[in-house]
Length: 219
Ligand SMILES: NC(=O)C1=CN([C@@H]2O[C@H](COP(=O)(O)OP(=O)(O)OC[C@H]3O[C@@H](n4cnc5c(N)ncnc54)[C@H](OP(=O)(O)O)[C@@H]3O)[C@@H](O)[C@H]2O)C=CC1
Ligand SMILES: CC(C)=CCC[C@@H](C)[C@H]1CC=C2C3=C(CC[C@@]21C)[C@@]1(C)CC[C@H](O)C(C)(C)[C@@H]1CC3
Image (cartoon, rainbow, N blue to C red; front, side, top):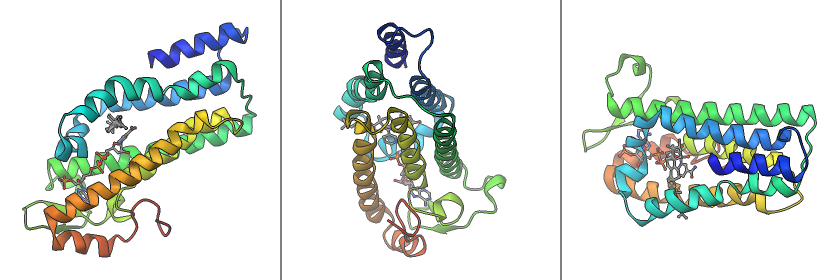
């Protein structure tokens, strides 16, 4: 957030602007929302793969201290010297994309987190689940009945909204979208293997019921 904010100030100085450009504002506000949401819903981090399977090690230490701050701010860095004017229609479309992505991301992550914390929660009574031999159940309706990783789908739509304000003149601001797609497809495969190992036949049944991984009817 601080790096992004300083990029907005640098853009004003370099481009001699009285205020940051619309594209810089969108990138800053979108990423600020992501960070604030992560803090607000901090307890939901407890049911993510990093804590459930991976544990704390080099990836999270290096990832959080170096990778995230210095590569996730590349869109703002790009905009400092490469103005990308946006029409009101383009701004509205990008904001709408971000809103849809955020809605899917937040709702699906919170649904799974609430279910893992208390499967008997009366607010989740309408959801179907299948039991596994471990005593835990798997959701097969609601967001987790649409695709196997609805939270990744929402996150990818948001990633698209973070790169679009920078236009299509250069590959650099698209770095995040490309890297994130590879990261999430790889993470999805890792999670599939881990869940198959943990839940065996119940996982196979889940995969037969929910056929698509990230995008309904596509992948
Ligand atoms: N911006 C970034 O750089 C990154 C963001 N993220 C985001 O973080 C969020 C969390 O992602 P991540 O930790 O990878 O994975 P998930 O939050 O999807 O966690 C996967 C775990 O959820 C449980 N699960 C899977 N399917 C079901 C089901 N049907 N019913 C109930 N539980 C189920 C399993 O664990 P168990 O059964 O043991 O509870 C599984 O191992 C995502 O939104 C992702 O996009 C992730 C990586 C990087
Ligand atoms: C190649 C390399 C070194 C990759 C590092 C991956 C890490 C940067 C990511 C692994 C899982 C992450 C999550 C978030 C940030 C990036 C890392 C650490 C996250 C904290 C971002 C904010 C979200 O709201 C989240 C809490 C869902 C998310 C959890 C996973």
